[in-house]
Image: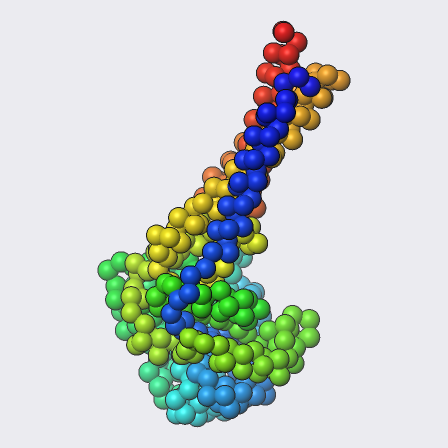
Length: 407
Ligand SMILES: [Zn+2]
């Protein structure tokens, strides 16, 4: 093929090597840094969760003097919390409340409100609060807060929305009820006028070691790792979904506390000790997470599992990684389709035409789906990059082939 000479090959290989090199260097770049706060958040404590496992868990945290935040459901569903159909509710029993009362008295545990019943209200998306009107949200929170305060005997001022989903009415109701903190997912609505603090979940127990190992090397201030876990993470409670046994979890806690510059705290303690937990940091962090979500996990900056205000350096690295990855993908798919289509044109012009239009149509469909849904998943973004490169390559093939025939 006369159009593809040795100079073009060398330039292409050099560009690709540069982009791959940039990806590897940027994704492993580290700077020695300060202390990291780790918060363990155990979700779903209720009348429906296994009391024996939870008592054992509390014993482990107490034995090692490690603080813990427990998110409690005041009135758990009796049947299935994912089912939107009306069902009986199980109020937190005095026995389970007493376990929490003892634990809070010891000073190692603090309590957050985890919804009202944790029952899904939407057949298309798991949520208890999102999309529900203000009055209903306020009434559920108010009833749940009052019930737990009376039963456990501690003030309830932190809120963990079930499935980490909520909306602006949730924030307004939290404000009106005197809550000081919401701990949900890494993205969500924000109120810029409210004094509410944000302490989002950043990782689960499977990612904890990797996240801590990378976080201790970064110089950013006030790094926080909020690790969320549930009963089903333990083999003793769920043989299929369980990731580790209680004794393996105990070893993990030992490892965490043996790491330098790691302070384990409850949500309450983190709120008191760490500055700048207002909406600004949450907005910056959410944007940064959205940016790095467009890069495959292998190439993501390892700091992405910690909650912090991303520095300019981190943002630049994030953008460089995203650009390098997508440019590599774009160039590779473009060249592959360019070569493939040039060969195809020689055999079947109709076939080459069909490939060209099929790729373009597929690109339009993927873009339309993304725009229609208002959000693009990481997989959709990879696909758009590949299809754009492939479409460009297949159209260029026609030009290259035509030019060659003409000469
Ligand atoms: Zn939950």
